[in-house]
Length: 336
Image 1 (cartoon, rainbow, N blue to C red):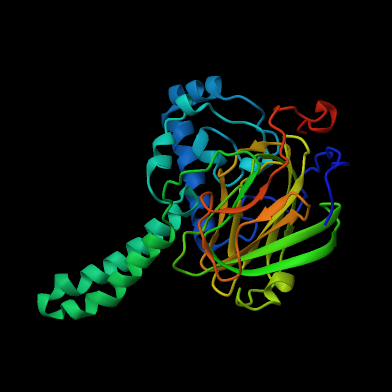
Image 2 (cartoon, rainbow, N blue to C red):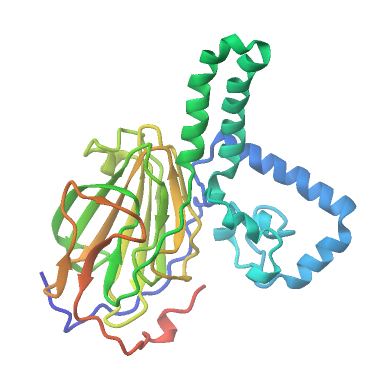
């Protein structure tokens, strides 16, 4: 344990590694189908909607440099938001209504493709002969599960200062005390959360902070309940530094599981996220870890076996958090 008399210095932003070329670096069948659909959609817009494209271009801000394809409207940023800096204001986004759908936007393709497939399989026996209705039950249950898996319910985020909220829904399966954590620069506590296939899989930021670094590691797909999964499975590591004194550092790691083979993280190095902000998901059963500084003013508020909800459940509180709203030197926290 340490005190905060010598708080961590602000860190330089680390550019996105070359092997992270998408917010879903592991790819996937539905992912590639959606990319193909994007190619057709852009052809259609260039051919028949030139006035619309001119309007979207005039409203866009930032740069599209680094994007793997043309950024014609906000839909084109879905999988490559982390590759460029361009964006549209919410009022100028004609597709912002999709965020009001209680399904993860990153999972809409799976909901349509897989959900549609199971819906069709459930309807087929009824269309052939009503007496065959029992055959509709298994695919109907699969349809309900797919839609349920990608649900994205609203969350009420606590606003008290000094709190850290859970980055994922699930059950706390590990609380480990680390003598030294290189990124945090001192003693730390690692909290592991297991997400079953029935949990909400949206990941949320545990605090207000600036994204310092992202590290993607391809790997295996062991059962997330296996301790070795934390070491060997595909994962995305996110380094964050708080924007308020004493500028603590935290890290969150998304870890794929036996069925969860698609990690989504749409964060950009250098951007600031608010507590409880959704930043990605892990598709189908997984594990999420958060590492926090172990300090004398820390009050840990979870225990092994406890169920938590992302953005809602308080997992820890630092009682010394300053409320003056001061910021670290801007020279070290300027996004690339």
